[in-house]
Image (cartoon, rainbow, N blue to C red; front, side, top):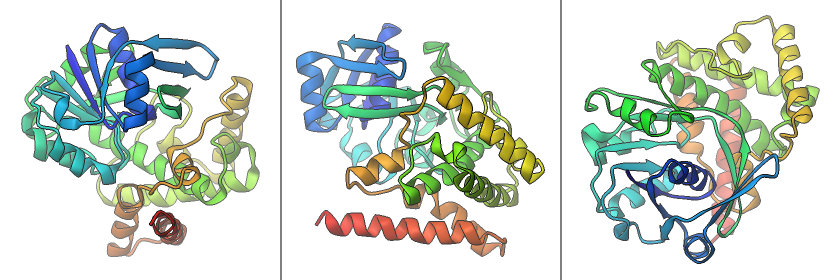
Length: 322
């Protein structure tokens, strides 16, 4: 199998290393410093438990040079995707994205047609430096066919990496569940500059996290999408239906688990972007929820306020970058 990873930063590099371990020929399309380091020294991937592996994969900063692929994985930020897909001239029989947002599959469907499936990633990663990525948060990856997908495409992707990727027939619920969680997590960390585990061990942040998640859940349900409990501790359906104090207690226990297992270096992608002065995915993550809430007259004042502040932070970052 030949795999092309478009937008291979932290997360794309981690996935690229996994496909390489499974025997695939991997090409990373990345920013020039990262691509050059990978070509010269190989791709170094570290895990939160300090294990380090080196992977010999190809890398380029030119999407047009990546060539045809059996599988295209899109791992770029949402605002970079249109240009990347336009510049990539190759063909593929399978494509999925690990981006944030409920509409992330649409550009892939437009570009790759029946080869595109929906993808959801619960994995965390950090780009430590050129050529070095850190796998900072354990989590699953889900794929599912969408309307118009060649039947069985998602199953083929899952079969290529069976220990990492699971096919789901309810991929729309999975996507909205992850997106609901992302609104809460990214909102709290971006506005407080907090590392992931502190959202759960700090009482005030824990409360805001839960309230924001519950308001986002209102939007998902208004869309007619049932939220679910995915495997693992972040049970969105349960958290958004439990009595408030019970939900807060479960979140506190989750924070203690992160500390006990050494997962205290997790920096949500929004925080990484702010620290590096890079734009935020407000249009992809927050705006779809805030817009639907306003259109439907839903009571979601925290969601509306956080979305406005996120747009403000993003505007400042873009202004400072000029």
